[in-house]
Length: 485
Image (cartoon, rainbow, N blue to C red; front, side, top):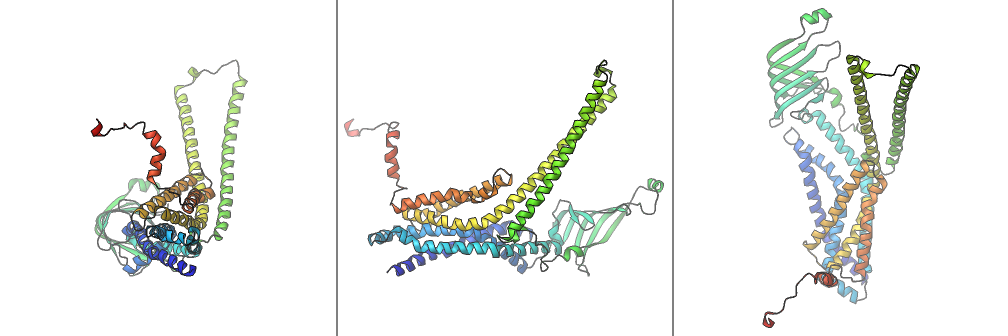
C-alpha cells in the first residue's frame, strides 16, 4: 500500500517538475541569448558555432534553475494534494504528512547530490570550453574584436572605427590606425573615410583595404636631429591602401589547444583550495611590499621634519619671517607642496584600488567554491518551504503557487547579490556571505514545516482579522441599521 502511495507521490511530483524545469531553463537561456548573441550575430559566425557556444553557456544555468524548479514543483504537488482533499484522506488513513513528504525528500536529496557533482565536475569543464571558444572566435573573427567608436589594441597598432556594418561586418567607416613603433621606427598614423576586411591568402594575416585617406609619418630613420627639425613630418594622400596585420600569435591560441586553463571557475571544489592558498600567499607578498613602501615614505618625511627642526634650532635669534621670503621662492615652495600632496593622494588611490582588487578576487574565489555546495543545500531548503506551503495553502495549478515561489526566489536572489557585493568590498567574511541566504531561509523552512505538521492556519485571513480587531475597531465608526435610525 505504502509503496504504491510513494510511487503515486513521486509520479505526481515529476509531472510538473520536468515541465517547470524546461520552462525555467528556456527563460534563463533567453536571458543569456539576449546578452551574448548581440555580439555574435551578423559577424560571420556559422549557426553551428553560435549553437555550440550557447550550449556551453547554458550548462551554468542549471545550478540556479534546479532549486527554483524544486520549490515550485513541491508547492504545486502538495497544493494539488490539498485541493483534491488527498492529504485529508491520507491523514484519515493514519498516514502523517511527514510520511507523505519522505519519498520526495529522498528524491530531492538525490537531486541535490547530483547538482553538487554536476557543479563540481561538469560545469567547470564547460566553462573552460566556453571561454576558450569565445577567445578563439574573438581572435579569428576580426570584426568581433572591435567596438565602434572606441580605441582597440591590436598586434602592432591601435585601431578605431566609427562604424562597422555589413552582413559579415566587413565594411568600415571612419578608420583611424596608429602604428605602435619603437624609438628606431617611423611613427605612422593612417586616417581613411572607408575600409573593408578582405580574406587574406595567408590566414595568419588580417587584410584591410582602405579608401580615400591620408598617411601621416614622422620620419626619424637614418636622420639626425637637425634633419628632423627641417622635415618634422609628411602626409601622403591615397585613394586605395592595403594594410596587412600579423595576427599569428592570436590565431595560435585556439580553442582546441585550450590555452586558457588558469581560471578558478575551471576547477573542482578540492582544486580551488590550492588556488586559495596561492592567492593568499601572493596577497601577503603584496601587502608586505605596500607596507614597506609606506614605512619608507613615512621615514623620509620624518627625517625631513627633523632637519627642519634642526635648522630652526640652530638660529633661534633669527625667527622665521614669511615676509622676507622671495615671492617667487614662496610660490615654488607652495607649488612643490601641492605636487607632493597630489602625488601622495594619487599613490594612496592606486594602493586602495590594488587592495580592493586583491580582496575582491580572493573573496570571489572562496564564494565560488562554497556555492558549489551551498546551492545543493538550497534544493533541500526550498523543498521544505515548498512542500509546507503547498500543504498549507492547498492550492494547485500555476496561479498562487507560482506567485509565492517567485517571491521566495526573489528574496533568495536579492540576498545572494547583496551579500556578494558586500563580501567583494571586504566588509563581510566570504564564507558567511556564501551561506547567509541558506542560513536565513532554513529557519523559515523549518518553521513552515512545523506549521504544516500541526495543521496551523498560517494564511487564514480571518484569524489575523480577529487578532487585530481590538485595535482597528477603535478607529472604525460602528454603523446602525437604517431601520433603527
